[in-house]
Length: 194
Image 1 (cartoon, helix red, strand yellow):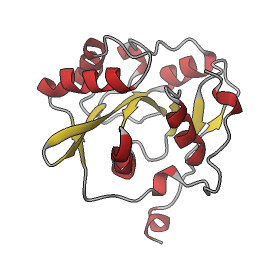
Image 2: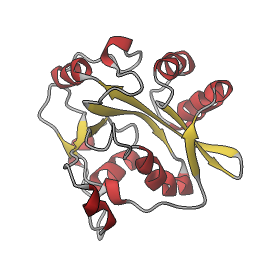
Image 3: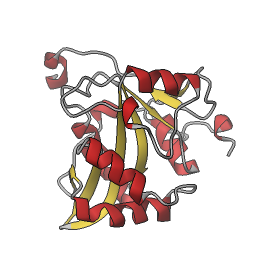
């Protein structure tokens, strides 16, 4: 898709992804092992190009339990957010264009408790009104080990691309032309309460 020519939504002021509001309608939590097939099917249904997602998601989930998140409303799964927490090797592969997006090698991922060099938004599936849960997902990514890691993503849909443009992602100069980055600027904890 020719995402590079899309403009930000007209009349919309760009927002800061890290400061999107939380909503009480949705909860974001670590996915349970038995929910992975349902979450993979949801992503496959709504994101073009994603197929056979369950086994790679299971491998990443087993490596780092906070990687696959379920978005829930009234005890029903309504969305999924899957993130790859990259170490310096993973970030270098992302920048060089040699990163394996479909089935990432565990050697490029951090273990729970390890510092994260970057976050790759592997799959974000928040269909229709569920997009309101993005503030809750970002709240999860503001935990101490993640809050200063830049977030990388590749859009899967035109709507996803517009969302990225409206929320501070920019095209990068790396070797992967459709890879976008949201640069996070280190802040003191005090700034988050202003």
